[in-house]
Every structure is written in structure tokens, then in C-alpha cells.
Length: 233
Length: 248
Ligand code: HEM
Ligand code: SF4
Ligand code: FES
Image (tube, rainbow over all chains, first blue to last red; front, top):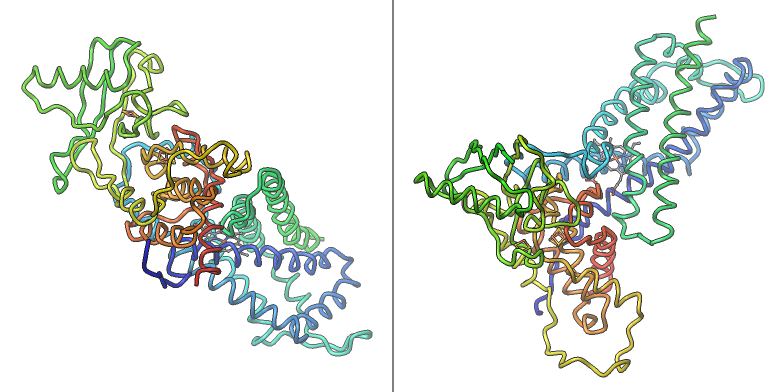
């Protein structure tokens, strides 16, 4: 064997998957943090308003959190572009489809639909960022003086108002379904893409990933439903 | 038993192919799938038609030639079997059986059910070997190899290069094949001197051939007639990453 090879990591199929795994698993951490913050919405309205808004202020002003959020924006963009490019390459790899193919015989549904689920997530992320992130940063969310935390932007009221629309709640619940399926396969797959596999720990990790997928998506989905139901009274 | 067959017919690499229907009236359930194809071809020859071209060689499950996509699955409905080891008793009288070639841009159709799998050979030529003669079998225990590694290397080495993994993968990825071929050498002492170069060169060739990217769906492992474990794919990722880091 001779001749050194200098192809960059990102040009190779495995390199692209390594970045999918890294960004995907980082986004899983992000989701866990995001969820923990959002669960404050379940507190009684009087408490939740100030606490949630103070939390939102911290999340948009603290320099360390800011750094993390840039990493998150980057990860989402990179993950989406990389993932869609991989999916496009995969299509090229089989230009002629089978007349008959029994896909369900040997692979799970989620694993076969990662790109579709990811695209749904991308659409959701755009809607979600427009509704809350854009409004918080560039829109005019009303400011009020809270007793404990000084001036606060009232993201809480913006949020609770948004979820008085049933169709808006529906978009969120369906999208959380997409998150659940995406992670049902993605969590375990991400580790394999990084080359991590072990006869004992891999099955545990896969199991944990499935639990994570269910718990995170269900808890996220409960929030809009809860806000909608409380708005009815 | 009586069978309806739907078979992909294609005159040559550039020709347009299509599915063609055939009927076989007297199929013995004890026949192998390839024997059933022989009966069909005899019938076609008798009728003055062109027989269906298909690859086969050993007919005992060890050469990997008998590529056929049967009823939507590589090598048909049974797991752990090649097409030559599939028997007609697993089908029922009156069944319609769909038979297609492997489909992947890296495996172009030559004729009918035959595909060109030389992409696999070029991946092997890129690094699936040891450059020096390692001599005859060493004395027992003169070259200590952990039993576990010997077992894993042996399991990986049972890959027969049939291409069922590529054929069944929704991405037409060759990661199970390349994973097995890199693993069998990287796990053994003789493979160490060229360990990094091998992983990098074989992956580069794999990419050049136009195979898809792995999504870890696990379909390959289910369809592989030799039961090659998907662990070999994670090991390939690991070997490749490691090589990229330590290569001088
Ligand atoms: C919060 C959002 C998201 C999270 C937590 C997430 C997480 C993950 C994880 C952990 C994987 C497995 C990586 C691997 O197999 O190496 C994955 C795979 C994938 N993701 Fe995402 N993802 C998210 C959003 C998206 C978006 C927006 C897209 C694209 C439009 C996308 C497209 C994909 C695709 C196509 C794969 C499969 C890659 C492959 O194996 O071929 N994901 N995701
Ligand atoms: S890994 Fe299995 S399915 Fe793939 S070529 Fe080798 S023997 Fe065939
Ligand atoms: S003909 Fe050799 S494996 Fe089937």
C-alpha cells in the first residue's frame, strides 16, 4: 500500500456521518435543557409569568448561554444541510427503484424516514423561531416592571396567547411526534456513527435513547395542550 | 406446484428493461430456487426464447454469486441463506414471485438478473490485503491473539462479497461489506502495519464507487447470508476516524 491520502474528513461518507452524530447528539442535550426551561410553564400562572420571563431574560443575555445558543444555531444548520445532502447522495446511489421492496422486513420505520422526519423538524423550527425567537429578539414584546426581577419582556403572555389557537397546538403536537420518531432511531444511531459500540453498553444506550425520545417528545407536547386547556377556562 | 414469476428482463447494460411474466406448471418443492430458474430457462429455450441470465457458481452458499432480489428481499424470504440455499418448499402453490437484480448505481445491470459487482473488487484492491507475505501458519501460541479478537476477525472474514447488504440497504450503502473487510485485518497482528492506510483507502474507494451513506438502519445485518454483525460498521467508523487522527 502506498501513497498518502489527504481527503478531508468532511468529504468522506463516514466524516459526514460523524458530524451528523456530533451535531445530532449535541442537539439532544439542547432539547433536554430547553425542555427543563419550558416545564416552568406548568407552574400556576401568577408564579409562572415572572419566573418564566426572568428565565427568558437570563437565556438571552447571559454570555455563556449566548455562546451555547450560537453553537445550537450552528448545529441545527449544519445538521440539516449535512443530513439533506446525505439523503440526496443516498437517492443517487439507487437511481432505479425496485419493483417490489419489503422495507419493513428488516428495518424500523423511524430509521427509514430520518430525512422526512428531519425535514418536518426543519419546517417546525422555522415556524417556532418566527413565533418566539424572532419576536423576543426583534419583535415588540411588551415590557413590564416585575416586583422581583425588574423590567421583563412578557414572553410568557406571548406564549400562552399563541396556544389559545387549536391549530397552533396541533402543529406543535404533531411536530413533537416527529421529534420522538427522529430520536427513537437517531439517539442510538448517533453513537454508532461516532464509532462507539459495545456488546453490553450499546443495547443499553439504544434503550436509553428510545426512553429519551418518548419522554422528551411527550413532555414537550404536553405543554401546548396544557396551555390550550387552561386558556379555555 | 404452479408458480407465476415476474422477472426483470434487460438485454444489455444500456437497454431498457422491464418486468416479464412467466408461468411454471410443475415445480418440485424440493428444488432449490436456482434449480427452479434452470427449469424456467429450459422451458424458455424449448420455446425458442432467450433464457434468463443470472449469476451462480458454487450452489452451496459459499461463493456469493447468486444475487437475486426475491419478493422484495435480498436472497428471498429466509434469513441467513443465499439464493442457491433457498428452497421452493418455502413458497406455496399458486404464488407470484417477483425476481429482480440487485439495484445500486455501483452495481450496474449487465443483463437480466446479472449485475457487475467489480466495485467490491476495487474496494479490496484499494487496501483489503496485507502487502507482505506473512508466511505459513505460525506455531501455536507463537503469535498471541486474544480469543475474542480471533473470533471477531473470523466472523468478519466469513463475508462472501455477495452484495446483499448493498441490495437491501435503502441507501445502497456498502458499509457492512467494507466494515467486515477492514475489521478482519485490523483485529489481527498481521494487519497492524497498514491499519490506518487500509481503512482510509478502502473507504475512499467505497465512496468513489458511488455507494450510499449508512443510516444504521440495520437492514444489512438482517439480510446478510453470513450473519455479519452491524458492529463491524461502528468498528469501521472507529477505524477510519482513528486513522484520520493518527495517520502521519
Ligand atoms: C432538534 C432537532 C434535531 C435533533 C435533536 C436531531 C438529532 C439527530 C440525531 C441524534 C441523529 C442521528 C445521527 C446519526 O445517525 O449519526 C439524526 C439524524 C438525522 N437527522 Fe436530525 N436532529 C434534529 C433535527 C434535524 C433536522 C432539522 C434535519 C433536517 C432537515 C435533520 C435531519 C436528519 C437526517 C437526514 C438524519 C439521518 C442521517 C443519516 O443517518 O443518514 N435532523 N438527527
Ligand atoms: S457483508 Fe454479508 S451481505 Fe454484505 S457482501 Fe458480505 S456476506 Fe454479503
Ligand atoms: S451460487 Fe454460490 S453462494 Fe449461491
